[in-house]
Every structure is written in C-alpha cells, then in structure tokens.
Length: 77
View (spheres, helix red, strand yellow):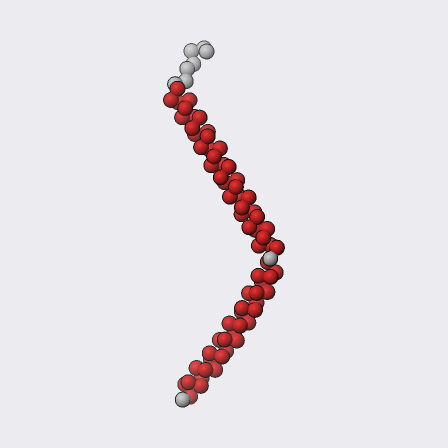
C-alpha cells in the first residue's frame, strides 16, 4: 500500500459524514418536490383565489361604508 495507511476511525468518520450528506440531500429533494407540487396546485386555482379575494374586498368596502354611515348617524344624535 505504498506506506499510506488510513486510521479506522478516520475511515468511519468519512463514511458517517458521507451517509449524513446523502440523507440530508434526500430530505432536501423531497422538500423541493413538495414545494413544486404546492406551487402547481396554487397555479391551478389562482384565478379562483383572485375572484374570491375580489368578493371579500367588495364585502369589506361595503361594510366599511355602512360603518361610516352608522358613525355619522350616531354623531348627529
């Protein structure tokens, strides 16, 4: 072996580090896949979400104008 020796503990250390890196990378990959799927679902329903938001906005504006009218009436009394 040309006089080059690697201590057992160093070899075990490298094996553990490599295994941990592979495990971490697989976790990152599954998280990326989940996020891509979530984004695809969002893109599918994006127009529906925008329409719902528009309806909510209209209702809030209506409620705001009603509250302003009620405040005016209360101030007059």
